[in-house]
Length: 144
Image (cartoon, rainbow, N blue to C red):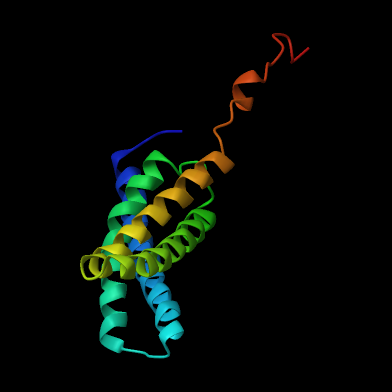
């Protein structure tokens, strides 16, 4: 497969856009689930979580996409890393309350990043590189 710079740039731009979209969604979902535990809802916090998730997703997904997720189907890479981010963000929030006040600010983003990385590594191991195409042998006189 030919690797043209235009194609690489287009794929990277798509990964940035997908990472921003799904990262923002992951931040909003994680915060919604945490706030549902407390029985409250705040739009300003939701917007902050979505912004932070979008920025982190726009940075992390292209890096993970090129380094770890090359053979993972795109839909599974997006949804799998999003679920890992949501779970990590929730766990980071819960554990962040134990280290109040600094943990409340650092816990959710750090938990989301660690959840994203864990999901990316699991997906990488689930879809290992295959070498089957290199083993196919064509006989020398296949036309006769």
